[in-house]
Image (cartoon, rainbow, N blue to C red; front, side, top):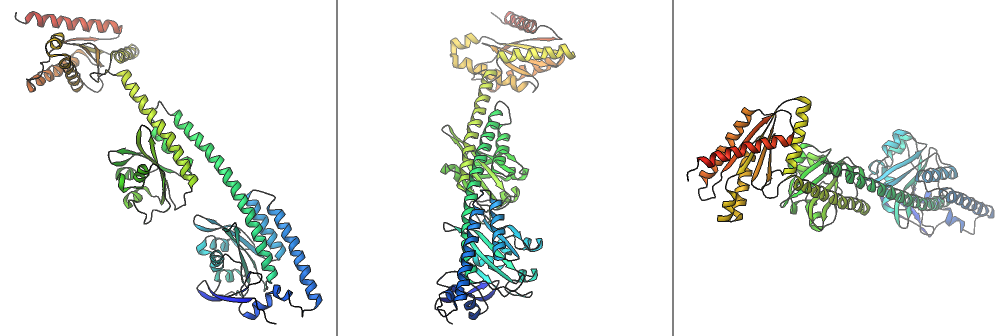
Length: 552
């Protein structure tokens, strides 16, 4: 008997050239060692052969009815759940049961190709060997490429076509694509350890079952995506809340990078700050000090810089050979892929937020949206922290001179007295008054008087120690508070101040001369107001002495 529908083409399978025989009428692929084998298995064509005995035709019809019932059972089983694991296990178990084969496995598409999802009837060693696309042997790669059902019926222990399957003791393998709406979701394979011929009806049944399984897998994946999206949105809200709770502390940048990494499911992140036309690593999470040191990249020569210029997130799925990726930075960071989003608001650009991954991966639009949303919220938090710091500075410092103001001085003096009351010790306080500031203002203008005040504030700050507090008490009066300092130590500081004033006047003879009267008071625990008053009196005593000594 001949068949006008049977055809073939050459295919490469594990480096061997083989004939792929198929039926154009039913469109499943039937792979055999010869045309005769393919013809013998193409029962779909034989079913239309009117010369066959009625008993054979009746058997074929009954077989098809059984397969339809089995197919209905698979449809009901795989569509009874939206859990991906349940769908895969149910679908594969039903296929193995109905086809009466010995083994089977399902591989699903992933960012890295095809990954083994589950297996039945084969050893763990074999499962590990075929766990990725590179190790799947040729039949799975062929099915994934051609996206048609394919059969191998002539495997032997020393088979050059499928050596791993032969070593496992498998004699036949049937593999079919799992496609939904034209998209390849994976490959399902079944196998036997005894000789077995697969009819065209078998192949048609497997292809139909695979189509139903693929539909169920698609629904399960969509359901999982929805669950993942809800979970990620919940994590996004948690991350934003955690960052906002850190306001008022110095840990906002640290919190931002930690929460960004947690949100995106990685362990590395960096806060990149804009410094002129370059980006620097301001804060890092689980990245080396070397990464932080070498990450100084021009905006136009970095992916994060381009993201800032474009105002949109950018992704690098694999750093190998990617443009605008610095190999030195990659080596120091130890990552293979990254996603970055700009830190921008209507007030301007702070920089960028990047998360890093140790393996190549594909970033979805959802990934980009999530990071961009978090980056937007992080920008607000960073700006709020900056505003709070500015407000704190304004509350503590004098706007004209930049030194501390009277409120901060009184708070610091009160704390110093409390410490002396608990632990004992001394504190010294210098009261300083600019001489003849009113005359300077009247004769040279208030701008000249302001310069004198700023010059004195700078000289005081430069002459005092880090533990000392320099404050503008009001008008032309300044105070230097020196905790833990006796009179001798305080007089040394006064000498430095007096010397600095003289050097300033000598170095700038055209500037308004600076003169100041200073009063020193050293004390143990006492009322802060009393100490200020005593130092003030000492200062005025010095001013009177200097006025009396001045001729005329």
